[in-house]
Image 1 (cartoon, rainbow, N blue to C red):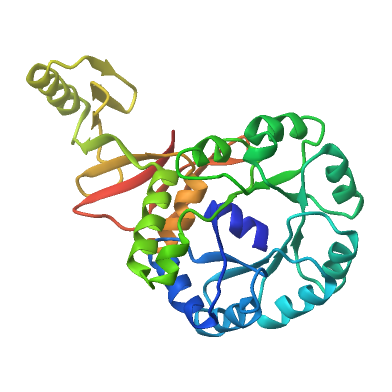
Image 2 (tube, rainbow, N blue to C red):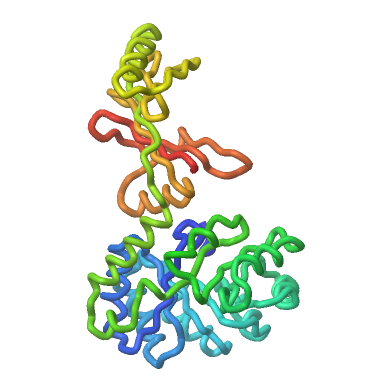
Length: 318
């Protein structure tokens, strides 16, 4: 899996400015504990190179990007320190060519179709849009994506918890960069718990987990129908008969024969099954690849490998 695919599954890339290199490891650990083992450490301070090196050595599972890279010399410093990708606010052909020559992925910033065509001429298919909100936001990305269908965009600048879902819902958006999870005062005060809490909130909002229905195993079609009717009477629900199950309203699915799970299954909806799968696996929950279902190349359904409380759990696309 390449760097950009990992960034896509992470969904959010915290953009951080580190004044003191000693803060880098606890800061990135706080991001990881909040659900984002990924960071873009910007070359806006003299501490950036050392910060990247320390995180790379002490937190090898954190995916590191070097941001605000403006020169070929900074590309070399970032790569030597352990960065996995280069991100820049604009498109400098010398920086892009040098990054590609040393084998490190690069994502330059663009703000117009001319920038896109320059990036494509350099062999790139992923670009940063910066400053995203200030130059037109999602409408600009959608307009620019129309004639460049194979390009992927990483908007940064003005992205926050209130507008990130609109960006992430766009099929042309790879991921979003943002700094709201790492407020400057929290770093200065070394309030790592606040950063963890803000990150956890952002990840939860991005994934948007919601209970869809509970499937209950029955031993026969007759029992399924009987139990479904009982629930309809109990809660005033509508009965919907199906081929393999009967529904009482939308919340209860009575299986006509035992299915996955000792007792049944629980369906959880999410904005992106692929992204949710990646995040759950970061938390130590494996998915059963054999249950995956796709629509137009997009993962739409998958079960967790293990049961919880006698129930199988599966993710479904909203």
